[in-house]
Amino acid sequence: MELKLEQKDITQAALVVASLLKRSATTMPVLSNLLIEAEEGRAVFIGTDLESLVRVNVPAEVKGGPGRMTLPADKLAELVGLLPAGAPVHLKDEGGQVLLSSESTQYRLVTLPPDDYPNWNPETALTRFEVPQKLMRRLLDAVLYAVPPRDHRRVLMGVLLELREEGVLRLTATDGKKLSRMSAKIGTVEGEATARGVISGKLLGDMRRVLGDEGSLTIEIGARQATFLIDNVDYRTNVIEGKYPDCDAVIPKEFPFTVRLNRDQFQLSARRAGVTSEDKNKSVILKFDDNSCEFTSMAADVGAFSGRTSVEYDGNAIELAFNFQLLIETLNSFGSPDIHLRVKSEQSPCLFLCDTEPDHECVLMPIKLADVRRPAAE
Image (cartoon, rainbow, N blue to C red):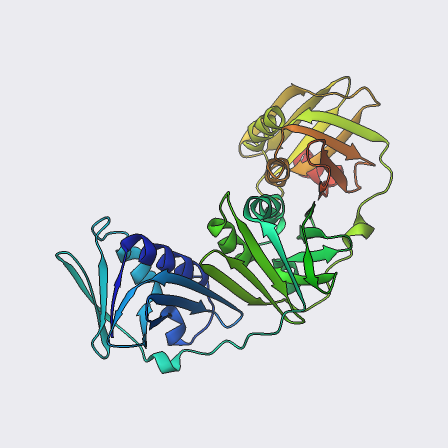
């Protein structure tokens, strides 16, 4: 079998598949490779880590009839970007090796038997709907920062995707210290009117990089699987099993204090204070009083900081302590700089809202002031 592909097509396919495979924890050697299935007029690049699968369809000239081959995903993704720009790329299966050539450049890559590649058994979808790609990208930008990179509670390493009544799609992510969720109205729903599943944050992060400004993606949700169809790229994944936390229960219902702030000015002050924050909690203290916020921080081996920024607040003086990095991530999840901070007490979860995104809310747990001041006093 021999294939001829455009460089831009094989580059996109290799990068998308390699991204899913590079963080795979599997010990199966064949899963470090991608699988190429070719038939008349097209080639399908496939990668799986057994929990998720991605397929990228690209046009191709196929000689020698339909066939399959595998290639090392990371090396292919690296080398295709170094090939002559715009020149066609040829792949020829030579049994145990694949000859990759483009103009005067040639590689011979060791391959593994395609029959060793595991099959993916698709599940029948119970619910199907479409979402504009631009909207889905905004939803993911709003919540993915709250997914922990690692956690012994596997369910927290995913995003709770819910199709609620009246065609409302809601995404929620939390690691126990921070929480973000955002909702959006979508169009027609086929099948069951409501659905939910916890989707791998890793897979959604890969999918985020594929989404564009135009067109829609199709989402299909079954009992144990979810599918995301984006132009020529298909993502399929098993939903993460386990009970997702009841996020409504952790958000206070009454907030006696409300602060209106400018995100850009506020996070600059947080970064300044963060330079002299202690390493363990990266804590900074915020004191709100008379339309200003005073930032203070101290680290015994670095020094101390004190600075002020303007806010809209005319209530009683209140003090809060936050991990400055989590505070900045929370602020950056909003699409507008005009932020409202609602506070119940110095130890209760704080709620961040934005007028231009009424369906987006973030929660951040403060650090106990005593835990911040004790090391400073010592």
